[in-house]
Length: 562
Image 1 (spheres, rainbow, N blue to C red):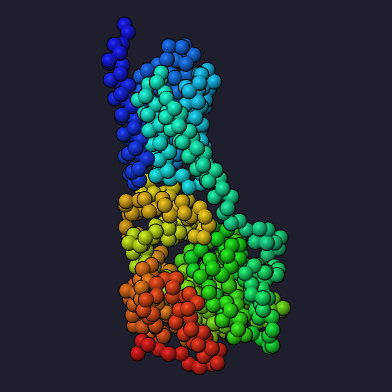
Image 2 (cartoon, rainbow, N blue to C red):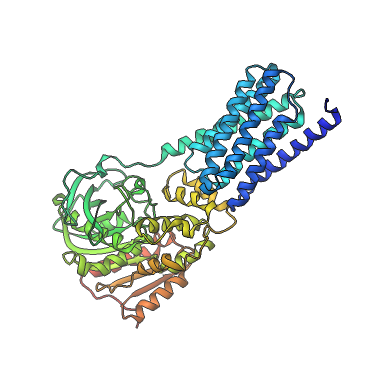
């Protein structure tokens, strides 16, 4: 018996409105619950199938193709229901494959249509294929992106169902064309951003024979990118250790003035956060700006040499010891050792360590490790600028910092790789895990980080499923707080307007160190935020240069603890 036209119209209208409403919610709502996302995707796939079946064409071939598209949607929904244990990975694969299959069938359908209907179906198919490929291939696919991609597709289909298969006007074609163009643009953007990611060249690969002794120079070559006219530079590859018995390789940059006489005092620079992937080494990308080093001209003008480590895992093969003290501190000391073997640089024995942010953490660890690990490295002073020293307080406050999830991703990913008792799945919500993994694989300065920034800013809940201040993660964070005694004069500078490494957290760290008997020259700079503290016009840099001159002159340091 034929279905009355009024009933058919009501069914089509209802289905179309549900498709549009559900698609709009998926597209604009940054879902942070995997369970909710799965439920809505399953419902969306079922309604998608209904949208195909609600008004089947009379032509047998077209009818079978519509039924096939509906079957693809139902199959995808069934797989999602049965494969929920695979987590968000299942969502990405199923939605991407479903969109791809649906789009291919729609393109096949378009071959048998005419005029406006052909264009509308073809453009809809192109949009589905492009969105499916984007979901399957874009490195930054996340819960938000999956929801947006599938939501856009539902809105498109709902609009087409609402207009009726026999009443597609130019606006239907225009809408399909707009979505197809957007989908293709996103696909091209994703591929372009992926290709723009910095990648290390063969220089960073291990040679055939590597000595077991840390601090040995393995390879060097001239370096000219962003080097001042009056300077000479080399990038070097050297041996180091992540911990006792754990050998590693690291790279570094050595810069000296061309006009020099006698052995040069050394500023060993430990850079701030650039990322945790191999391509994030300053010598691979921006050698000075990426690590927030704005005082190169000042260093060279004073006749000092610069040795700037990349740390292990940046440039060289990983893992990168992000905010893990042993690996960071040892690589700073070993870079200085190795750079002395570069006879053309003419480096002397006097050494002052500077570090900012992550590098401040590394500098403090280098100062504590030097007497036992590298007694041959003469440290005349250690300067930590806005150091990430109070790690428990830092990680606890990242939820309150705009984009703080980026740094949280770096920390939990690095610690999960370094320690057997920490699992990322134990601390990060299922829906946030792909966001954390993809963010940890990107450098702060690369264009695709904008995608990760947009993703984390769309979250309406923290990434954590468990308090990071409890359990093995908290224990390891406390282990990596730099509490070892620093025998060299110690300067700790802090910006009073810093929202990332907060003055309160730094004051608590300084108070604990002073109570332990560690002499510290603690200085705070009003109006300076995290990066502003180390910019060229910062009073902290002027003070740092004067302080370093005093260290090389053998003058005693100041102690503000007493």
